[in-house]
Amino acid sequence: MIRTGERYLDDLRDGRTIFINGEKIANHVDHPAFKNAIRSVANLYDYKVEHADSMTFKTEAGEQIGLYWQLPSTPEKLIARGHAAYEWAKQTVGWFGRSPDYVASALTGMITHIELFESYSQERADALRNYFSYVSEKDLYLTYALINPQGDRSKTPGEHTKNIYHTLGVVEKNAKGIIVRGAKMLATGAALADEVLVGTHYPLKQGVDERYALSFAMPLNTKGIKIISRKSYELGANPKDYPLSSRFDENDSMIYFDDVLVPWERVFVFEDIEMCLSQLDSTATEVMMDTQSLARYAVKLHFLAGLAQAMAETNGVEQIPAVKESLAQLACYAMNVEGLFNSVLHCPKVYNGFYVPDKTLLYTYRVISQSIYPNVLETIRKLAGGGILMLPSSEADFEDSEILGIIEKTQYSSIASPVERVRLMKLVWDAVGSEFASRHLQYELFYAGAPYQTLGRLYTQYDWEASRALVEKIRML
Image: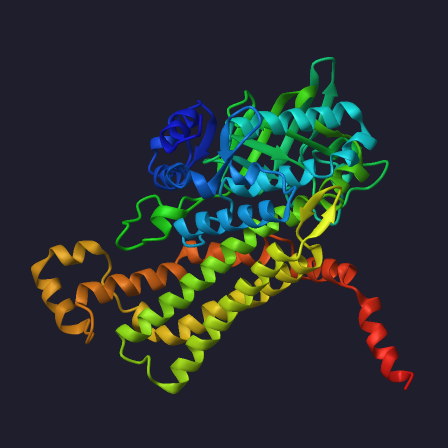
């Protein structure tokens, strides 16, 4: 049966351990720190049901599940899953980075390269294949946690003398599975997801760090898993004052594993540094995830361009040449990324019978996305000026007749009422200046790695030989 929003909400009432603001939450689904974001996810599932013809496919077992679980065995299937990702992103106007199709795409990318796991261990490959069947048939929402806590970054995890389980590692193994202890970050969406996929995306040292070279997946309500949430941006946020923060704060968490037993059937990599890195770098994991990210980012840039244009029009400056220039630059950014998205869908590479996105194009996207986003925010800030600062303190000001009278005299626009103007400018502030907006800037800058890392990957992937051949062609004249 296709997963609905209601079913998702029921499944999420699982008794997990989650902490926020000094409190252990008993019912996080209805807690004001997470309630609205969780409902935003439920709306995505309902949208999928309402548009099942373009958002789902039927498995051989007859299950109707999201297209993000479908292996791209034809060019048309890759295009269809890309369009589905784009349509889902439009429902959150690009502000949900880790919607349910994100980590699902990562697992899909592993399955397209299942022979890599088979060459490593048939048992681990079978575990991954069976897990993929399980989560896809149930259409579960996964977060992932790949990054080690920072600590002393001059040392690898095994070189920490104060606490060797500062980072998640193996305590012991037995016939049932492995017992793990320690922390992982950044589990974006941990409060919203059903399960967590754990891996390693950090250099480990041979002979020192094998205990940390792991990949597995577990339900987030497993005994011993403790979710430490960062501050919630939706908590106490009036939707009229913070229309984005109050709805789309997917949250980020650190997950602590307090001697958690992971059954062997859920372990995909065990104490193997090379394989743990190959799981991401030598499969289609990154490119399948990045295709979803690219769809979301394109939608987000279109939203921000439209928001800037609406603000300029409301302020009566949209016909000023310098303003047109700034708005056109925002449109250019959006169309640049849109074009890259379409290229990724229509120019795949064929591997093992699967049509997978071109890694060079997606590494290019990572670099471009990091450089564009600060420019987009700066452009909108310049267009806004002091208008996003001199706003009424909250929606409650409209309920006081004296304050409302002053607002109606001072928040003037030729095409919008004073209240409409205030609410538009509040939306602009939430997109570029609020704490929620600041988190998104940090996210866009670092979710794919630091800039030197994304540039380094592109340098390695780019076809320098073809470029040099063009140079030699002229040199030989």
